Amino acid sequence: MAYFRAAAPVAASSERIGVLVVNLGTPDAPTYLAVQRYLREFLSDRRVIDTSRLIWLPLLYGLVLPLRPLRTARKYRKIWMAEGSPLAVYSERLAAKMDVLLQGALGDRVRVALGMTYGNPSIASAIDSLAQQGVARLLVLPLYPQYCASTTGSVFDVASRALQRLRCLPETRFVNGYCEDDGYIGALAERVQGHWDAVGERSHLLISYHGIPADYVARGDPYQAQTETTTRLLVARLALASQDWSHCYQSRFGAKAWLTPYTDDKLQELARRGARKVTVVAPSFAVDCLETLEEVAIEYRDRFLGLGGERLSLVPALNDADRHAEALVAIVKSRLQGWV
Image 1 (cartoon, rainbow, N blue to C red):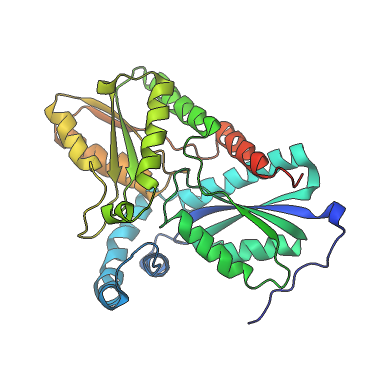
Image 2: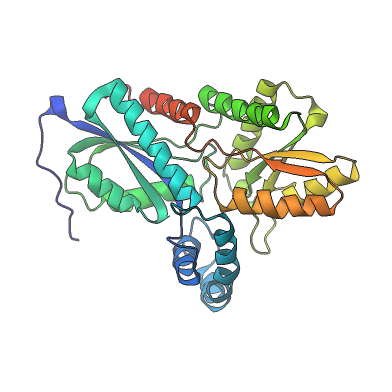
C-alpha cells in the first residue's frame, strides 16, 4: 500500500484537532455522465444496496446505470444553483461557518474539512488535507441526525479505508447521530415556526424522512426508532396536537417494502380528509438536496394539488443557518472533551 505523507510531527502541546464534516455527496454536474458516475459509486455500496452481488450487479450495470441517469439528470437541472449542486453549496457554507465558530472558541488548534461519502470532495482528500495540517486527533461528524447503516455506517467504512493510507493514525472519535440533541431540535422547531410566520398561518405538518428498506430495521438498524424520537421532540417543541402532524417516509427505490407510511400515501390520505394546505419538513436532511427541492417541493406539491389541495410548502432545511452551525459546533465541542 502507498502511504500518504503527512506533515512532520509536532509537539503534543500544539497538536491540531481535525473535524471532518461529512455529507452524502452529489454529482459534479447535472449531466448524464456525471450523474452516472455518481450513481455507480453510490449504488455499488453494500451498505446502500444490501442484496447479493450476483443479483444486484447485473441489474445495476444492465438496467439502472444506462437508464436512471437520464431521469435523474433532468431532476438535478431543475434545482441546480449558479454555484453548483445545492447539497454541495450548502454543505460547504455550513462547514465554513463551523470552522469560524470553532476557531473563535478554541483557537487555531481546530481545523474543519468537508468530505463526501460519494463524489467530490472525497473523504480521503479531506483526511489527507487534515493530515498535511498536522492533525493528530480527528472527530468525524456525519451530517445525519438519525443513525442509519446505509448513511452513517458508510461514512465509517469510507473514513476507515482512507485512514489506512496514513502511517501515523490520528486518535479518532466518531459521532453516530444526534437525533435528540436539544440544539438540533430547537433549530428545527425555529425553522418550522419561521416558515409558518412567513406564510402567515400554520397548516398540517408532514414530517417526512428519507426511507430505508423495512428489513434493514428488522435486522437491527435503529433508524426508525431515531426518526420517531426526533418527531416526538419536534412536535412537543411546537406544541402540536396529534391531528396537526403526520410522520412518514419518502424516496423509496426498488421493489422491496420500505418503512411506512409512505409520504405520497399520506398526502392522499390528507386530501381525502379534506386538508387543503400542507407544510412539509424533512428532518433527516441537514441541507437541501434533490430529495427536498425536487421530490418534495415539486413532485409532491404537484401531486397534492392534483388531489385537490391548495398549497404544499417545503420548510427549507437547516442548511447554513447560524442556528444550525451553532448547534453542530456545540455537538462537536461536547465530543472534544479531554482533547481541549
